[in-house]
Length: 541
Image (cartoon, rainbow, N blue to C red):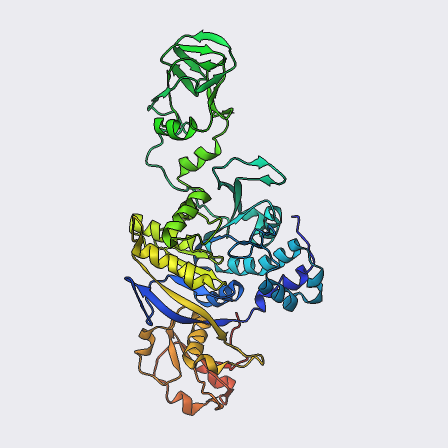
């Protein structure tokens, strides 16, 4: 399998392992239109902080649990005029590159910098993704080829699902001093080879879709005079059945041609993907319908529908909107312009529906304006689901735009009814270990206890564990193993017979953390006791 090499790769290929584990500090909860200091327990999280460190902070609770990841990373266009900087010369990135890559970072091209930034983040996203999950990454031509190669390396080429095309703009591309494109890509990978079917949004009816098996439903459409362009000057084509076997066109009126256009109104009957409204409002106002004079197969912008669907109608068919409409919707939410090229919630809804059930978790680590959360809330309102979103945003607008959008979507805005729901807002806290590798007591003993329990059990430390009467070091019991964390600030703790005499929980095995151990190996083996030294034996994420 071909691999990609760039300056600095050797410094970042395993950097995700060196990223410090930091705790998430709960700032506030928001639910039922009210903000409080108490957690909502909704499962929805908005995290403000460096997404590399935030992804690492999510590992203890979410490793291999995220069903769908969608990210919209910087496209590396060199445009530095956006609300969030789309150039990897951002001061935060440059500082990070200097620390991780070293002096070599001064010689990096912008593509090298982008790859150095993306690689460790993708490694952590891979760890968070569930075995039956998938990741979808928006990108454009600037880094699409590079993204495909590093994703092949991280996720495995065999897990490549495909590259989807989003027609982001209704404005046709042009050839000015620089090509303006109206297409972006969505690169998709699954975590493992599995039997997931990526259906997308299922239509209520396929009667309007000529690309499935033939349907029984035909439409009759009226084409006004001068709306059809045909390569004949003056001629009359008699009414009848034309076209192809797959796409028969029944001409219901004589087609009178004058100077290459239809002289009078004319009706066709077929399995059209158009509606009369679409013809009147969109197509006739922008261009003419072309027609093949031999078979009378109607085409739009000279594209034969037997081969291809026009870009603007593809979005119509799958219910995905453009960035222009997404911008107008975002303006309604904030009554001002906050992003130049936002994604539309309908795009994320479409992606999410590829594989997510009603209780799955969706992660977006480049949250931006909060489109992914908006999409998840929309889907839950539509079908009563309980999908959860996790949003990570490093910029300062994580509160004023990302979280504020979620609040307004929940409460309702303009003519939009609120979706309801709740979320918890977090800031990245301090590392659980200090520079010397010792436990950082300033984060609080309870957070350390939670971390220890999760590293052992991959489950959260709950109140149910505390209901069991035992000593203060007791963490909980999980699958017939009792866990104890014998730790006190500024005091050397010891696992000895005196400590054992204070234990009350009966279990088949005991895992006990302490600074020292005075028990013999024979005694511990006989009584199924495993000693773990603090901090040496604490698992690092």
